[in-house]
Length: 126
Image (cartoon, rainbow, N blue to C red; front, side, top):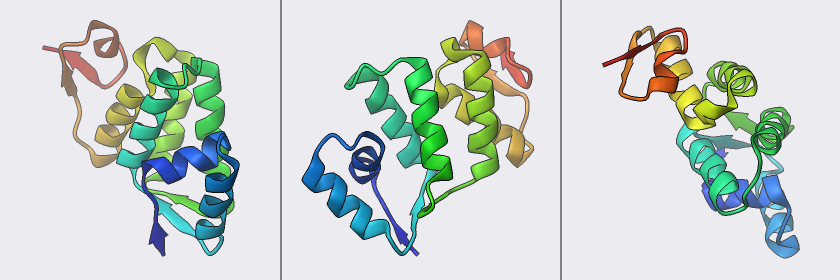
């Protein structure tokens, strides 16, 4: 299966550049793998460069998770991170994803200096 990088995932998520979006969709039509790092980078760009709200980011991640041609690395952790992010958007999606990846790997508590993240179940303030 092919893999895609952040800018390809962004074209699929935003459809903001018609020609590139069409090329991205064509590239993935036989299936494409999305690493958690690519997803985290794309979410960062959506929030910082596109100024997407937490709700818009959550909807974008949900659409990418359910895209018929995309296979997410560790989709259960991504779904759990999305669930946590929807209830606590102030944490940021990337922190939610980091926590859920640690949980799925059996490596809790997640040590952090972030006061908000430390309040999430499975995290611990250092």
